[in-house]
Image (cartoon, rainbow, N blue to C red; front, side, top):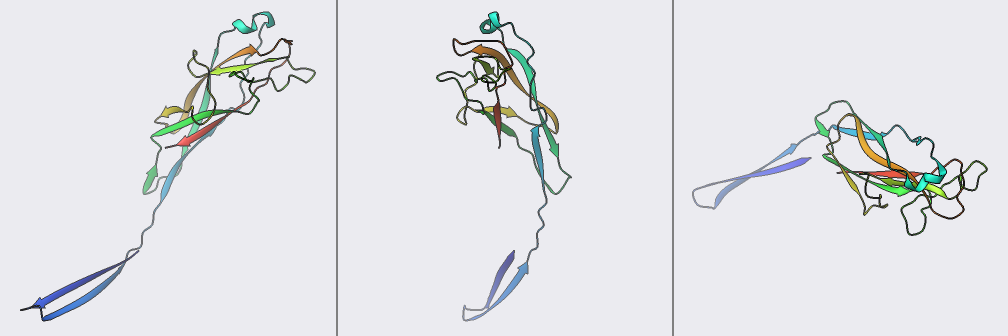
Length: 175
C-alpha cells in the first residue's frame, strides 16, 4: 500500500509557506489460517425392521461426525463462531410429506414404498431447504457431533420387504 503525507509550514503571515511531500510504501503480508470441516462417515446402517410394525418404529439416534482440521498457525486465524447447516433431499420426497422415498424400490432387492423420515430432535420432522437451517455453535478442531434421528415410514399401499436406501445432503454455511 502507498501512503502520501504532505507537511506544510508557514513563517509569519501565510505568505511565506513551504510544503514537503513524503511517500511511504507499506508492505503487508497476511497469513490466513482456515479451519476446514467435513463429514467422514457418509452412510448410516439402521439395521433391520419388522414390516408389520414399520409405521410404529421410534426414531433411532445417530451421530453424524463433523470433523474439523485447523491448518498451520499464522498471524491471523479464522475460526467460525457459528456453523449453520441444512438438509437437501437427494432422494425424491413423497409428495406433501418429509418422507424420503426408497431409491431401491424398483430393484429386485428393494423394499416397496418404504422410506425414511429424519428428525434432529426426536420429535419434529426435518424440513428441507436453506430456509430451514440449524445452528451448530462453536465448532472446534477435532470431531464435532450433529444429532440425527431416523425412522422408517411407508408412503404408499404397495408395501413389501427388502432393502431401503434414501439419501440426503447436508449443506454447511460458515459464519
